[in-house]
Length: 178
Image (cartoon, rainbow, N blue to C red):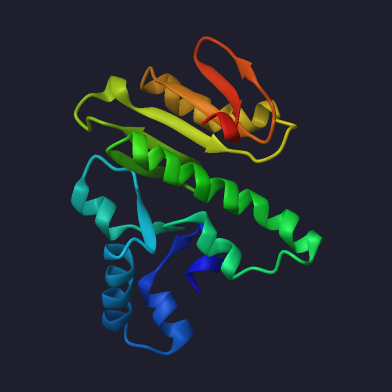
């Protein structure tokens, strides 16, 4: 189930209902999976730690290798649709190695894939990342992340398939450079 939810908002209650188990049991199993590094969670960025813990979270696999075990890459059409999810999971894993805190930001259905920092108290250290695993990056792809970064006077990066562009306040870089 978790391999199909990579980068998606997950709810313990919905998972429990889907598989026919008690929510407390599912919560325990997810805790075991997280402790054993099979999965990781990213929480919605909030100034309140309690609020962030109550909101929905996104799930990522501990390794992109787990993704391929549960998905059929013999069907190239299905495989190409999954590359965006795989790229987001890969970026999460790399960012997690570099930054102490990693979360996402979701406000009224608009989302930034990753908000990272090594110091939660220093607003100037926050960096924003959006994964767009394609080459054609439109200005509308930058709109929300640019407005949030501007409010906090931070930089942001768009992680693309192969595009490369560096400006004063943002960069579009290929995933493989990250």
